[in-house]
Image (cartoon, helix red, strand yellow):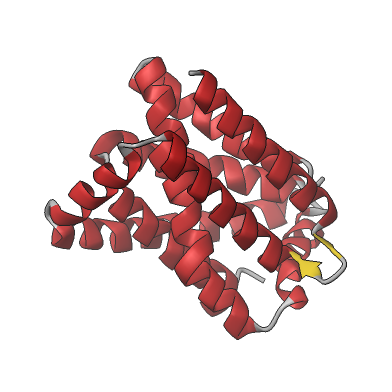
Length: 209
C-alpha cells in the first residue's frame, strides 16, 4: 500500500499544477498532460510487475467483445454528456461559460497534435493509470466497490484545481462510468478504447458547444 500511496502522491504533484495553470511557458496543457502520463506509466511499470502482464493477458482475452463494448460505452457516455449539456445550460446561468472554458483548452495546440496525443498517450494512458493501476490496487486493498469509489474521488479531486465546476463534474461522471466498467469487466482494453473514442468525439468531432 505504501507504494500505491507514493505513486498517488506523485500523480497529485503532477496533475494539480497542470489543471491550476494550464501550461507553463512553452509547455502547453497538451504537452504537459502527455508528459505526466508517460512519466507515471514508466513508474508504474517499475513498481508493479504484474501490470504489464495483466495488460497483455487482457488484450488476448476476447478482444473483439471488448472492442464492441468499448465503442458502445463511448457512445453511451457521449449521450449522457449531451443530455447533461442540455440540462446544465437550462438550469445554470454560468454553465455555458464554464463549458466554453473547457473547450478553450483546444486553443493551445493544433488539432492534429491534440488528436495524436489523445489517441496514443492521453486516452490510453489515463485509463492505464487511473483504472488499470490505481483502482486495481485500491480494489485489492479494500473491497471492489470501495476501491472504485476512492479511485473516482481521487480522479475527480485533481480536476478541482481548474476552478471549473463543469470540468470537475465531468471528471466525476467519467470516473464513476469508466471505474464501473473496470470493476465489472476487469478490462483495460475496453476502458482504453472507450476513453479514447469518447475524448475524440467530445473534444474534436462532436463538441457540445
